[in-house]
Image 1: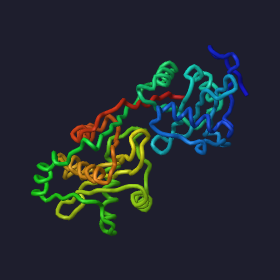
Image 2: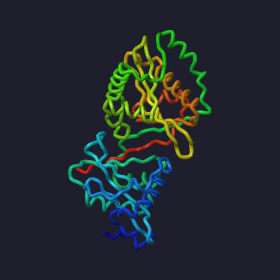
Image 3: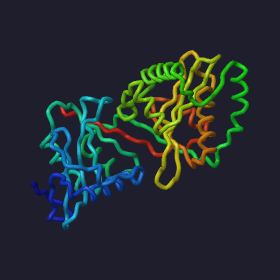
Image 4: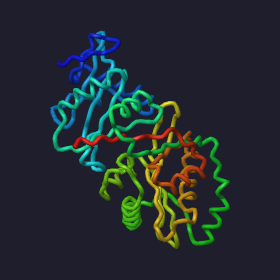
Length: 311
């Protein structure tokens, strides 16, 4: 156990996470993202892997902050993701304790936070991190969504040979869907936060069957655009759909297909009783940002990825 000075608590202790801290850490992390996601105690466990380490700050007998690093993943295999939650005054001693045990094979640290999470923004800026990437999130109140506004676009595209439908289950449809999904994933603008994990054909199909709905645009029978919705609940918003991925074949872009496709998906979600829709992406993907603006999404505070080069 290491000890650190704290401006408000001279008895502050910085130590490794223990399983008994799980409930307190879950509450701190949930509060740290302002309830944007809800974390449960069972998601936090002690680890003996050197590339996964969590520390806690204990003051007056209780856990008041936490920090951890884990491998960022395939989107940035050379990076560790660094996260903080709780009392911002403890972030520096927590960070120093983590630095003392950094695995050697990683070359940079990435910290992700929203621009209005001031305690984290201030820490990363003061600690010498670089504001490297920006992403946006947006939400739409489905009660205010009216598909009739997109009827003229639907009629125009129908006359040009385009039709929208929910993805069918046939093997031929699936092969075409997955091929377009892979092509769209390769050419979409991205940053480490918005780069999806690669999914095999079987894994993607299982995910859609388990928790999603997918919609496609066809041109003379051929799938030329697609969008995926995850179905679920969002704290404070009730039943919500999340737009996971949308792409259009390059030969069919700039016609309004993505807008119409997502409008159909949102109309379906509204008819099924969903109350809101969420989406997001990198600021580099301006075409999709424009599509979501046309659909009535309200852009929220920006997500910032801070970067620190270890060597």
